[in-house]
Length: 316
Image 1: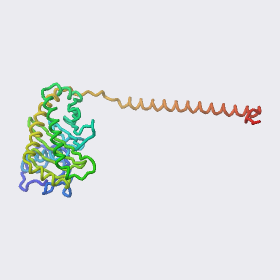
Image 2: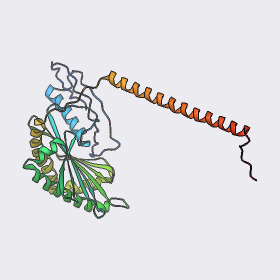
Image 3: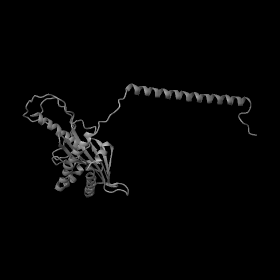
Image 4: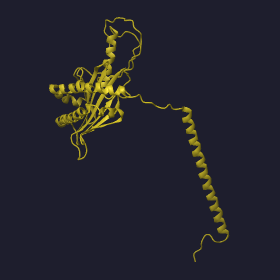
């Protein structure tokens, strides 16, 4: 992204914001030939008319990356201070065998899995300390109902687009809904749609912008984009409901005690490894000594039998 022509050399303290890797869509909003990977470290030079504009560029670029990877992982190199994120990962099948769920969902808070849901039991399972805390809130029943409804709605979407999907078996749809809060406001919301294992569509719910990642999903994007009710549904869930839950869960998160990890002494680890190696060497030498003793006894026994004429046995 090039800075404006008319720049102002604003004086401010240089500091490194981080390294950003992002994909830029082409003029048609598609990912493909126009993909470019950018790594940029701000060295303090004024890249724009103001520091605020420069910071907004970084946040926008980070949102693009977050949108492509709604559940943040090790690929996200930008650390946003005091920011919390919530990610819903839905796995939908067009059909499933009896006893197997056609919808499974996982919910992550700041990259930590704390809730699981499946359509077979139609129940939400809490995981970890955060899951137990959320289970005790009034939001639990609302969340359980919403996960079931969203799963059914996504399955209907999958069945609607099934004729456009080339597959011999059941069609699959993986949907990741992401929202982020910082400074008491929603700073990011997005949807990513993966069809039959191929990342296909991305929706930035903050400005309702669609991006085609897989060109084969272009028609699906056009169909969904024309459906204003569907777009409002996506925005309500990500910018509205998800942000509401994230605000409540953040209070539970901040009330949790910091995890304590016992420090590991490197010398202790090295010493234990050395002692373990010595034990194996001694054990191996002992086994070898025993085998050699048995072999020598056997040889001497054979030699004595031969001299006595008792071996080898002679058949009459």
